[in-house]
Length: 318
Image 1 (cartoon, rainbow, N blue to C red):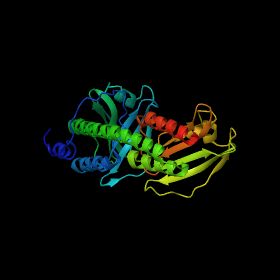
Image 2: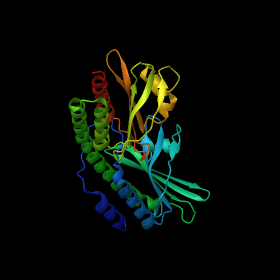
Image 3: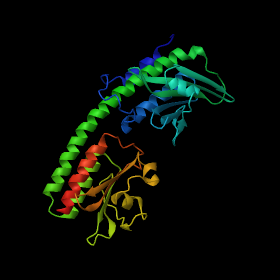
Image 4: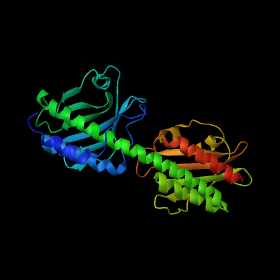
């Protein structure tokens, strides 16, 4: 490669973390911390400037749903809003790229020149770098591939480093949250104080945008909102009340034993509903969400939250 300036710039911005092989090989590459997004955007903006590219984007590969999901999109100097998802059709060029049969893909469409470069970590492809010249000023050629390949390699290594740091922070936050929730449960003498302390702990330690707690009322006939708290720790005056009958609301169905609902499944990445139960009684629902930030709730948090919900349900009954 004739000019190393692009790679040196990326190394300066990203290579601040040790790069180790992840222990959990099944971990999805979706936990890049939200505060690091600007670093990813900076790298893509620099690539656009250096190579005179109109747009650049990083997509993560969702193997379960056979799709590529945009993590960051940049148009020259601007970060593009919104979401983009690309379905991977069987035996398509993108399917071959993600299967490792190709290292790159160049598409010359009318008015738009596109190149896809695989993002790899320890031999596994976890996403793609997409670059576009939407104004058709300059087509991508084989001569562009070495620089794009090197850039993709540096970017993948940097994302890996950030992922490891985020993973370690998550583990510490989860242990701290478990301790905080346990303390809140056992030191509170009143129900309203206890659920408020639990909500504060979940927001402070795990960073949720909002926590809502619903409780079954004393007559056992309705599910009522008991507390809503936002990311600032402020309580919101939102009151809801649902009869405990199937078909009234997805939360009620979940509490009564129905586990699948398309309205819950649609937002599963950013909203989580956890039944509060004892061995023989339904106590309520714990809901956490990241609807404002659109940050995915990591699968690693679900067992921790489930354990917390079990503790909370028993404490409410007591």
